[in-house]
Structures are given as C-alpha cells and as structure tokens.
Length: 348
Image (tube, rainbow, N blue to C red; front, side):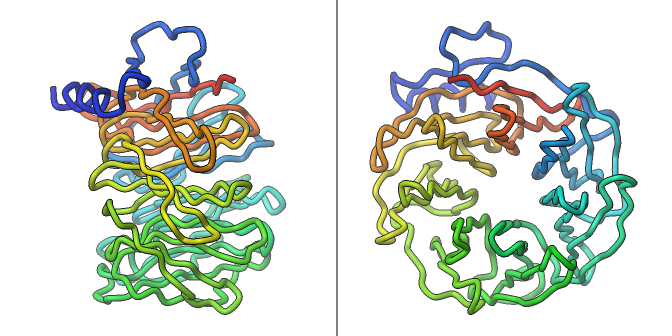
C-alpha cells in the first residue's frame, strides 16, 4: 500500500506533464521506455547494488550484496547464466574489454578491510584482491588515464575522513589515495579530459572537486536546498553536473564552470542510480520507491518531468547502455516475488 501511495504523491508533485505508468499497462505511443524482456535471477533474495556491462560480449553483471555474489546474464539469449561467488559485500563493477577482466568493489562489511577484486572474464575466477579500507563502494573509471577511483573508508572504518583509492587498471596496482574530509561519500563523475573528478560529499551536502593528478580536493560546492546527495551524472557537452538528492527527493543541476545551481526538479525517493542520455536529452533516475523518474532537458538550465514508471519495491538500481539503446532495472526478490532484471528499450 505504501508504494501505491508514494507513486500517487510523486505524480502530483511532478505535475500534470508527468504520468505514472504501471508495468501491467500497455505502453502508449511515444513511451520513452518500453519493457521488452524480464530476466529472472534464481535463488537470490535481498537487495542488489550496481550493474556492469560487456557490450561486445553481450553480458550484463549485477552485484548482490546479500547473496555475496555477482550475477551474470547473457543478453543475446535474454537470461541469467552464472553466479560468481567469493565476495563479502560486492557493490560496483567495471568491465575492461581489452583484458577481459572485471574490477569489483567489495565493501568487506564486518571485516577489517574492503577490496578491489580482479576477476577473469572467461573463467570468473578471482585472480587478485587489492586491499582497501572497509566499505569500498562507489567507483568511477577514467578512460583517458585508465584509472579506476574507488571510495572507501570513512565512518565504517572509524574515521571522520574517507579515501578515494586510485587503481591503475593497466597493471592492476593500487597507486594512490585521495583524502576527503567526510565520513561518507557517494557517487563520482569524471570529465573526459580527466582534468576533474567530482564526488558527492554526503555528510556535508557538498560536491567535492578533485584534481586527479595532484590527488587532492581543490574546492567544494554547497548543495543549498537538498540533502543526502547520492547518484551523480555529468553532461559535459553543456557543462552541467546532475546530482539526485534524497531529502527532499530532487534532481539538482550545477553549472560546472561556475559551481552554481541552475535548476532543481522533484524525482522519485531514495535515488540510487542516475544516467544522462545525451542523444535524447533525458535523465533516468531509479530509487528505493521502485520508480523510474524520467526528466527531460529542455535546455541546459531547464528540466521538466516526462514520466514515472513503477517497477517494483526497492528496485533502486539500474544501468543505461547507450550502445544497446537499453535500460536495465534490478528488482530484488522478496517473499513470493522472484528477483528479476527488467529490460527496457529506450525509444526516440
């Protein structure tokens, strides 16, 4: 009942231009997302976390923190095919095509450390574990420098600061740590040039701007009207940084040249993943309320709700893959409800 009430309240908040669609309804003409497949995940219950993808190999990866596994899907066949074990608390995934390896942040809950796990893409064997602080979670890859950034440490390590560890993916080595004065960090984004790394400083409701070469925070931007910044996305062509906050549930947009907020619009609650679709000028946000919030970018300073789609309780994690024109949502298993991944075709 509470999810139905939440959807109604959100629909009112988003205004008449936004509509709520149930997956049981037939899609209307011009739907931005069209459900085309459901892939069940056998024997897995509890929350999922983040996705990874092997575009050429048509494989999708999904972490299960409760099951302590990474679930593998064959996208060509449209089904689950394998479960990779050996983790403590897997969170985020990067697939590297050139080496056919997976790099996975493992939070290591209830243990002294977290790790960056390196997994072979053919045998799914864990070949190396780079020791980090506990609560290794958000990651961001910089293709310009081939470096992976992993947020770890902080309050779970008993510290009032966190670390962003730097992994050289060409040799699988831990090459540095960036100290951030906050016990909690969330999502990151990096410019194509590699010049700046952005991070959500959750505790202080700020955005941290990091110089990756100097490996230090060079400035911070306040988030004035919302708290608990969680997912982040970057529209670099228009110099815009997108941050979804949980209190109240809002998308907040910043000008990356000035550091000033330029727009704010309601979104679904408990946001955990967000993606910017540059080809269609859309933002897709998923959160704890089991909604996909779709927001249109009219211009770099104006954003309007397009639609909200109900997916399932606690379906907070998603992945937009522009190369495939597909959007994936993980729905956790609970009670009689089997765990599944919803596959949406992204429409023009």
